[in-house]
Amino acid sequence: QVQVVESGGGLVQAGGSLRLSCTASGLRLEDYAVAWFRQGPGNQREAISYNTWKGVTTHYADSVKDRFTMSRDNAKNVVYLQMNSLNPEDTAIYYCAAVRSYASIWDRPGSYNVWGQGTQVTVSS
Image 1 (cartoon, rainbow, N blue to C red):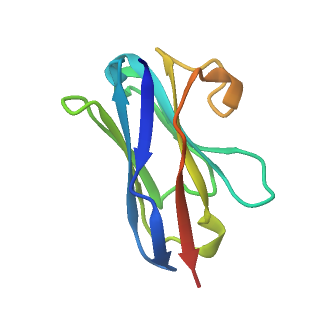
Image 2: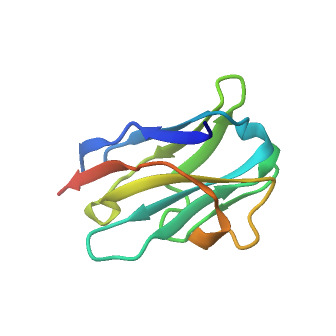
């Protein structure tokens, strides 16, 4: 069964950090483009970072650039999202998404065919 599972969410104070993990089974993440999306209360799902297969290229949304860092551990079949300098506007459910090789449009949810169930991140002021 092909799936990805997010973990690492939680409650953190403003200015704090969290590291999210996206762990895959039934597929080799090294062969997939992976993105992180988030959806806050009343908001549309927003793409925040993207990494092509084999980690060749990485994109970040302006809202998280210089604060969030995406990385891979191919040996563990895991993709990480290190989130620093968190603020209350970062409160959302965070999703990992994957598609083989690369996404046609990286920030469009329809570009991905493997999704996790999400992990809640709450940042208190």
